[in-house]
Length: 267
Image (cartoon, rainbow, N blue to C red; front, top):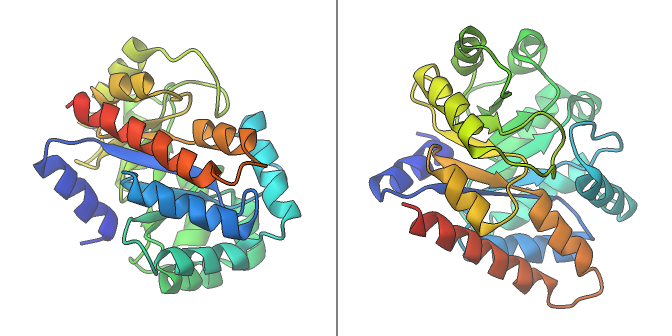
């Protein structure tokens, strides 16, 4: 049983929903980013998504684009991301998902990425711009020690949902809206309909909803029809607002705690 599967099983036994917290690895620098992850893991994040900084993050909004630029400017690359995973493993057993575009993995080497990620202690990966039809060139080189999280869009038809789920492990990431990360205008009723259809076709994999969830109230609302929520831009917006704040890691942790409290209240 993978660490991700075990985490969702434990949450399910407690009637609890997952908080998946995303940050860009190395923003604003390695040391502060590591401390931010420490505070997030201590404060209730059930799964940690580490974004691999990339110069052309086409699915991401301005907040995460700027976070990638800051991290790259601070010297982050795939090798250093792997070191961050190893360092996190020294203080936390929270499952870690590496969120990346395909280009950085291709440049690093598919087999090397898999081997180094597993050795460092990562539990899964999500490649945002790699559809199932084109992913065999990557995953055929891999074993089964790294869950491959797949994305489903709100416009995905049911038959394609089933095909995507058949190639996924860990959990399914349901994008709540068309557009980019950090967008506003959550439509919970429409997302609930898509989530219900996805659950019919997801082979019992947990479904987590992301994009546009920025407040505890958003998280509680979306968790009513999903197994968890993914929050990213809201964390990065907070980091960006406190680049000169020596207490920013604690403030990010406090925000994570409020999000998790809202999820427990919405059980």
